[in-house]
Image (cartoon, rainbow, N blue to C red):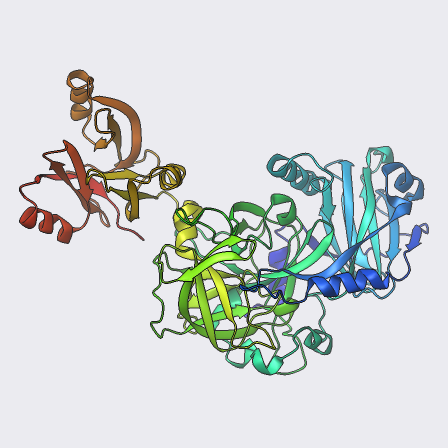
Length: 616
């Protein structure tokens, strides 16, 4: 369990820190802007957005907890500069402040449109009257804006930095510059404030309970408290001026050190600009089973995240299903002490096996809930309520039927765990959406498959130093094609109907390293098939003597010589197909023996080509 002091200390390592509001210096009264109450139309629009979809698949929705309100008085740099009144602090720095209020708000988040900021500028935000503030720097904000623009283009959204939220109807923004710095160097405006109708920061369970309409159907996770609860985070973010909440899960990697990797859904966070607005709330659960108090170790951290990988639910096609609705993020800070790095499985899971899987999630930003169910089918969602549900194991989503519990808006992005009640929970997917609800507890939900997202790119971070080799079967001539490139794999699946995708078959290294040798690739121009060799002498011989047939295509990947075994490696066996003049490679001793014993008239066994690594 995380102790509050330890959690706070961990947060100090991040770009947004908690500090005590300075009351030692006399402040000149700053400008105060009261927006009054929002319109009934704004409130109703938000309620409408959160209503459950009536589509066949239920649809995917982040849960809206706030909406944008324009602030005309500070909508441009000049008007804000005129409102800021600067004064000297006891330490000689220059400080100005701005107070904004929105009647009825449970929380506020300020959107700062950045033109230019000194790196050594300090910005703080705190609830009016609070003794605690959230603080960041111009350097962090400038870095976030550069990342947004690089990833998503130069737009107002990319140049907007969202400060951490504060509780209540009024918030204070404090700007501080080093002594002697020209205040004209501060170039930003505050054209927008988010009016929070609900917020994950609400510590009063009586307020939070209103978010789930059927607590009796959505069990409190604290009642059973599986270890995986410590890997789950409630996520607060802003997209197009609207504040949402979803659920994310901290993921373990096989590198030297653990990183702050978070798995969630692409429909929650699908761009770097949105990722930069992220706040994470940890240990966000009740302090005891079904009680009325928040876990005292609950802790919220700001600072955004880096979007490393994402795939939408509609990516791919019927022939090339890759729509896992996955987003994979890297936090710029260490998760709080006591957080758990959840394991994962790269294998596909079968349906209708009776195995019970566990989901831990934050419906509506609520305290953590638990659902348990089984896999009943696969889904390939194509958008516009089009898709296929059946036993096709290539489809990129799992269908889940709950035994207990449901999901709601805000549960999106939450992990589905195999062995979720043990000390070794393993992620097999993350929630896209579905039809389960308080009024339809038997409705099905759909989870993007982790194994497909792992193949498509997560391996790069979760298992650094390895790549999968994908195998195809040519139905026209009975040959096989191998590639370690996801891009090439997808291109072949989309354009070459003669090649049937089989599976990833072994792993290799994508770059040179100690004990590794290059595996070279040739294409046979007569047959269109490929040939691979780790032998430098064979490569040179083919180039010198068979250039009329083979074109050298370069290094395909790296592996170990058969004469240099290492722990964990497997042998890659090589066959020559006599009639076609092509090669087959396999790490399966059973397949090797079967070919030798039953297809010896077609294939000549050539021995061990090189050493690779098994799928892991």
